[in-house]
Amino acid sequence: MGVLGVISAVAGLWFVLQGAWPITGFFGLDLAALYWAFKVSYKRGELTERICIDDQTMTVHRFMPGDDGQRWSFHPAWVRVEISQPDEHSAQLELREQGKSLEIGAFLAPPERSEVASVIRDGLDRRRQALLG
Image (cartoon, rainbow, N blue to C red; front, side, top):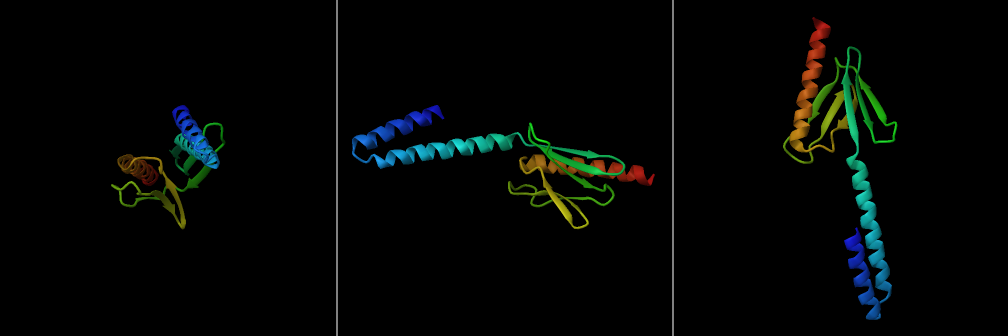
């Protein structure tokens, strides 16, 4: 950001010297917008999701550091794990149960989403087998 600030200041000074001083303000706005975009990106990079499966519930807890987060609960016998277009970056990993759906792992790369889907399916299958047997 410091390098971009120096570049904006130099370019802004050049425009002031050329008599086009109103353009200098736009350099400041561009820099502020870029700073805001970086802050949002870093904040979203701290997003965490924790999935717990026990006898009665499957709980998804999504939170950011310093935040209580959100919780969703599903019944492990009824929840389905679906992934659309597993090899594409825009793939969605969803948990579905009787009309409810929740997208998880949006911050993961496609191979990681497929791996998480497989791990969740295995955990649910083990839980269902334990309940039946």
